[in-house]
Image (cartoon, rainbow, N blue to C red; front, side, top):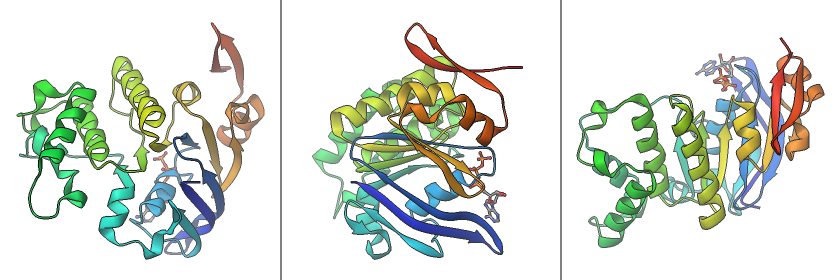
Length: 251
Ligand SMILES: Nc1ncnc2c1ncn2[C@@H]1O[C@H](COP(=O)(O)OP(=O)(O)OP(=O)(O)O)[C@@H](O)[C@H]1O
């Protein structure tokens, strides 16, 4: 088990957002967190990255209690791609290299440059390497932010709606990269998703959040007409389209 969440509860001031959340994630799994707007999906990701601290419960990452991990050790284990990012006057190359910060002791080494170049190639970003990130489209910037998390070489990567700004081709490309790194590098991805069909195609496990609790968790059988009705309030059928399971809402 690479991530183990046990009984966490989180409140913003007095409104309870998460209640008794409990789940485990295995190494190399791609996990989608699903649920309506405001269900607490981003809040859950932020708890796992210790951006915020739950009032109750424990989170274990790679057998370490999250509360007891130092900032640098946490950054070596967990990478985070937030929902919104801004470009700036730093180049794409330097932005990616910044992801090596937790590993750099005195100065940037050969390995740091090699990993940065490898990720640039992996995400097909080489042609933008020397461009400032404020001169990129939303989708290009999104790939850079994902790249920065990969350069960190974490065991777990948390992605908050990573396909949000992307066109169809880039959505598929990013999801494929996430799936590939989980298979080839055993990196675990925990992703907040709104697109049920993309989630179905690329995830091993699903967590359905409803009213601050986990309504259901498991494999793709978790996504069915009943759970979609209960969680989203939408009538939908599940169909097999050329061997691919698809959710089709009934309008
Ligand atoms: N900093 C904050 N202070 C107070 N309430 C907040 C704060 N951030 C989020 N909330 C509230 O917490 C609830 C859960 O928010 P969260 O962003 O986790 O939802 P989400 O499921 O990720 O939603 P979405 O799908 O719209 O991104 C929402 O009602 C939101 O308004």
